[in-house]
Image (cartoon, rainbow, N blue to C red):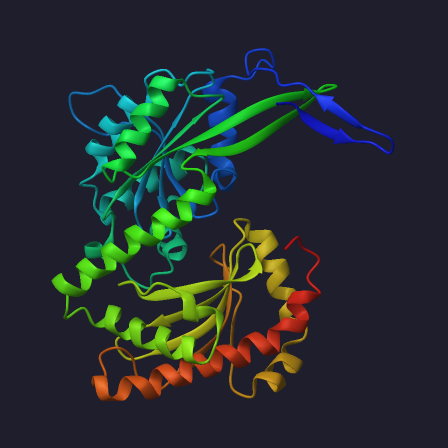
Length: 368
């Protein structure tokens, strides 16, 4: 089906073309562009390496190796063909090969990648921690799973049948179609997730997360952070906030979108501290700092509306910025009898932070 350009009097069809007709190459064009703008495939991805193949007795290389916000590894395979070839078989092999990757090894891999991009290699560890919103490495929570993303102009029936079969067996694999169009010399790309269909994916994810959390509660009943987040989410639900619908996890933070991509309201907890914050990361350091400056210019008004001390962290050495409140009552290592007091304060401060920031969120010159 063609795309349409809407004119004053009619819809003008823009016909689909092919990457070969547009003279776009797989590695030099598609891979290069996605490497630097991976949010085209999803805003929860961060590229660790390109053409990764650091294993013995194999010349195979992963087009792009990434991580997601849950610290899962993500194998991304690209084809500019209209049937995908046998890319699902390649990707499964790659997923198996990287499944034992440790956090420290990921830092080493990313350091090499940064060198190849003429960027400071010493930033590798901090960049990964920043993306994951971790204060320190959490080796036990790193690479719990490996996701696979297949990207092509189109996919044949054999490949899609195989992908659906793999998904039925709990392999986290998806197909993203990049449809090229030529509009009078302008190259357009229509990005479509075809497996799983978006309307089906959310339901499937909820079912799987429910099963996963149930297993974690049974197997890791002493996991204090999971129990802590369950209590906080319950309080948030009672107070009818957006965080009341979040599925608790075992990580050091949970968050909900502000309604603007890359601006999230996050809770964080450590052994002896608690945080309510707005975290700013739209994938571009300069844009993040401009957004931070927008709020910083009215921080007196925001502080008065919030009614308590706020920490303004521009984070010049990092890509993201944050505006946060830090609680002094303790964290998840406090006795469980003290948790409700800590959790109630965190939720109340988040409510006040959202109210204080809302007028200036609404005036941001950005698409919602």
